Length: 125
Image (tube, rainbow, N blue to C red; front, side):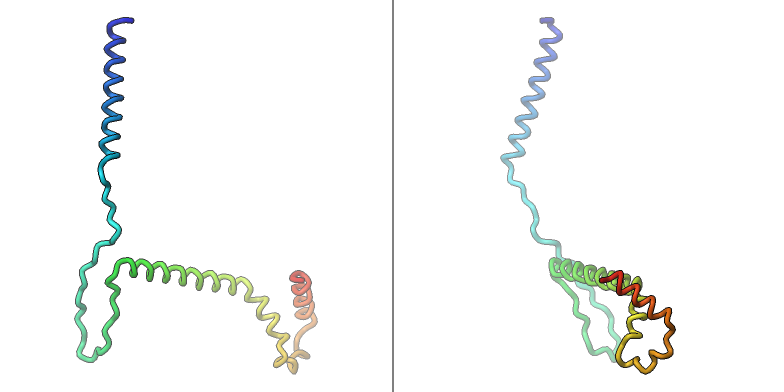
């Protein structure tokens, strides 16, 4: 072997060994992971004289995260229900005509309205 390739192999081997030693040093160290979130400083809000109730402030960071996630889930559910009801608004209006309280006004409904309702019932069933 040439002298330069031996030096190159020696350097690569030393670099590899140093890398392995560094990994062992890191592996043997204790890693500390914080399991608590930092507390936020409470701010006092100025109140007017006639304000009696005190706003409830969540001081526990974990509880605050739970509340925020709950709020976002509830908001998403409300928005989803609203979108679904908007999409089916015409169907709800058509079927509301078949309510027993509206039987007196059924004579006023056109035949096309009943045909639409029958078609929608046929597609559902």
